[in-house]
Image: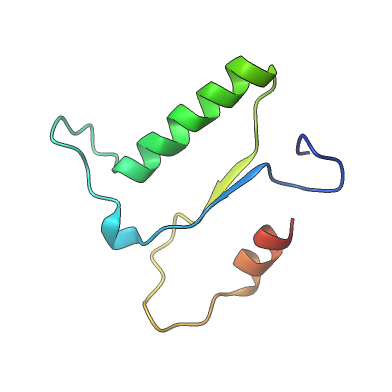
Length: 76
């Protein structure tokens, strides 16, 4: 359950998988994954709850319509 009643997620991260390149001191995670981790920690520290952050972890082909899961997550 999200912070705002009636929603499932607090944050929806939209990004291109091809742009999620690991930084120079890489631990295997890309910069978007690091952003998600830091955002999660910052919200938890400032607001006192663990936020629901959704980001698509599958590789979607360009020019393919978003599937129902992404639409559902965006709506929520």
